[in-house]
Length: 307
Ligand SMILES: NC(=O)c1ccc[n+]([C@@H]2O[C@H](COP(=O)([O-])OP(=O)(O)OC[C@H]3O[C@@H](n4cnc5c(N)ncnc54)[C@H](OP(=O)(O)O)[C@@H]3O)[C@@H](O)[C@H]2O)c1
Image (cartoon, rainbow, N blue to C red):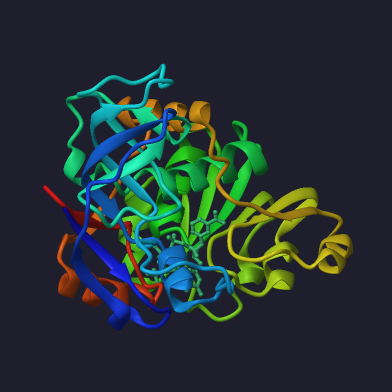
């Protein structure tokens, strides 16, 4: 089968295409034929060698973290899936292969009506947005929430989920993405190029940071007792104390139940994935895509389509 791997850490130029054996599965795993995956910033950070250890084994296939596809084989202890099921999920060890082996606890069922060729962009940003809005910021109807970086992969889903819960959503985005972010349902969209825009924001109950901006400015718009959650970097607790707010860093909570809830919400149209770019599963296309993606000026999601 075709896979995209690398033999050393570095820029996107370390990626190469290889013909490798279809993976074998453990008893608690399924074999998935991949229809789509997506670009996530963690792919690039990992490929750069930021987490390198002496014990790392090459070649590696760490590109891609989420995927959608069809189950082709199941291990003997797998209880929730059958051959032929349509699934979406997360694989930290990479998704740049035509077939991947995954633990059954990191995938969820999806309806056969859902288009698999873009669905691979939902699990990573969807789970992160859901964890931020529902579990960390604990948004409820009538609350005011500020979403920093609202037009990107995580942000554009966070806006929709917060609106669905009945919040008043204030969003920041670049000037070219103001209309896009309004269409997601944000009540106010602030162009982040506006000087001193923090001073114009009326106090909010929660701030979700998907960019990693100045934490003093971001926390200054919170009501006392408010919640600050960053998906980018750990908050400075002295700043949190100064504003009397609760502040934490978070990652998407990957459990089988959370993933299934997310996919059910997607199937029930509680949020949509805005697909902005589609590249094919080809090493030169992926190199170009990764090089462009690292600018962090993305709108919605960038998909790698296999079929
Ligand atoms: N902790 C976790 O579990 C987790 C999971 C996923 C991602 N992340 C991290 O979260 C961040 C966002 O990920 P993503 O996938 O959503 O990225 P993305 O799709 O590349 O989106 C980045 C967004 O940031 C916006 N932006 C850039 N500068 C800004 C500024 N000064 N003010 C407000 N917005 C600004 C861009 O808006 P414009 O295009 O409008 O300029 C763009 O929409 C990344 O750093 C990623 O590594 C963490």
